[in-house]
Structures are given as structure tokens and as C-alpha cells.
Image (cartoon, rainbow, N blue to C red; front, top):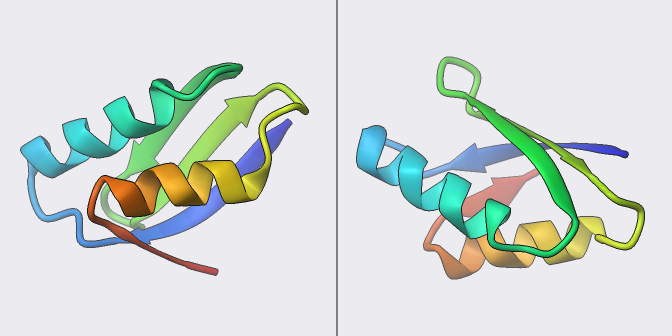
Length: 67
């Protein structure tokens, strides 16, 4: 499965690393890519991972998700 999210609050490489670590620490995440120019995160994951789980991990890391 793929989930595409718009993430706000990423202003530097350190923030991007925090975002990626937060998402990749979730179980059943295969791969994640962040496009800094668009502010979009594409997450490849197993069906057991819900969109809300990914969103929660991002928000727990201090960033906001907009649809």
C-alpha cells in the first residue's frame, strides 16, 4: 500500500531526519520518501498500518499533517 501525506513544519535536514525516523519506527513500513520541495511524504507499507497510525507518529514527532 501507499499513503501520501502533506507534512508541515519541516524546515531543515534535521527535521527531515526526525520525520523519517518517526515513520520508519512504525511496524510494517517498507519504505518512505519525503519530497521537501512539495512537503509530501510517500509511505510504502503493509495493509496492517493505518493512515491514522502514520499521521499520529508524524504529529508525535512535532509536525503537522494536512490532507
